[in-house]
Every structure is written in structure tokens, then in C-alpha cells.
Image 1: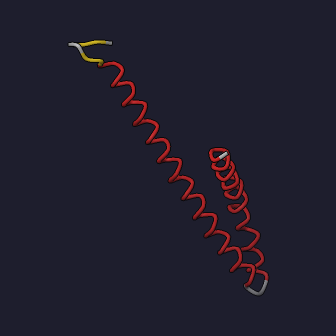
Image 2: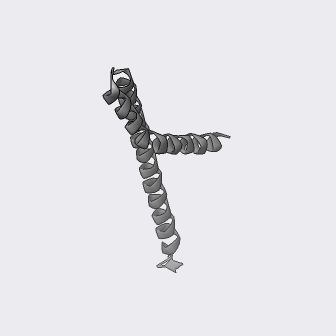
Length: 87
């Protein structure tokens, strides 16, 4: 739409869409990093627990699977989306 000889509506729409896209991509990237780091931390803790002798280490190792499995699935989805973007 034209106001005082300038295209006002188009610039506002493009700017709004651009800001929204950059914000969503930034949040998605940050979420991917958080998921990956949490997964690595839980896997390290699981390995340390399984290396601990006795029943207590075995229990901790099994308990950590509650967090590892969903994060592993989320990580696989992230990798799949990244590969789909490349291809």
C-alpha cells in the first residue's frame, strides 16, 4: 500500500516476517544445543554409574535411561531435520 509515495505496508510485512523467522531459528538452534549437551551429560553420568561397583550403580544406570531415551529421540529428530536441510 502507498502512503506519501512510499510502499509502507510491504516493508512492514517483510520486516515482521524476517524478525519472526530469525527469532524462531535462533530458538530452535538454542534448543538443539541444550538437548545435545544434556544428552551428553546424561550419557556420561550413565557410564560413570554403570562403572560403579554394586547394586547402587546399576540402579542409577537404569534410572538415567528415563532421561536418555527421550533426549536421544529428540537428538535423532534434530539430526534428521539438519540432513533434510542439506539434501
